[in-house]
Length: 85
Length: 139
Image 1 (tube, each protein chain N blue to C red):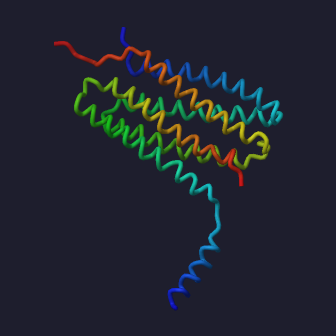
Image 2: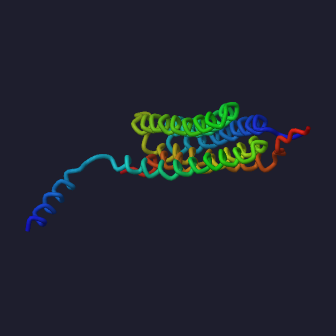
């Protein structure tokens, strides 16, 4: 009985939550590229540590990887211009 | 003659600037017909934002390459963080800007997407054509 009461109370509180859904959108748009860029940089550092003479070549490849990954973030941040409430 | 990081990045910056100028020109013509003067400003704002994004990545890699390996990490990842904050500020300003009429809003988005995808194609093309060599030091 008490559980039902608590659930009803929680439901009233949820319906009172207000704000901009775009905030969640930003979080989702940033989390993937954030992990991606971190992986690209960490693997490049690992490779440079293994073979320092390849550093220049690896940095060019790293930059290309970062450019592709962060394009997602930029497109995600620009979506409010087409998805209007 | 082999290319190094600096020459590749310099070529990408110049060609990227050229590509963004062409996209800004085409988008402002399209924007003018769709939304009038506001469409032109929307096209410029979108292409300027996309160009800033690309240039900041190039600068972070170039300056990071001069530092030790921890410096590279700090420059590239810190640069990414700064870029995200900068873009939140720019896009939240544009989102509330009164000069941006509702017809002109998709133009910002499509200009950004066109400049980003065009930039990626350009980057891949330049890197695949570059003659990169391992820096082998002969005894």
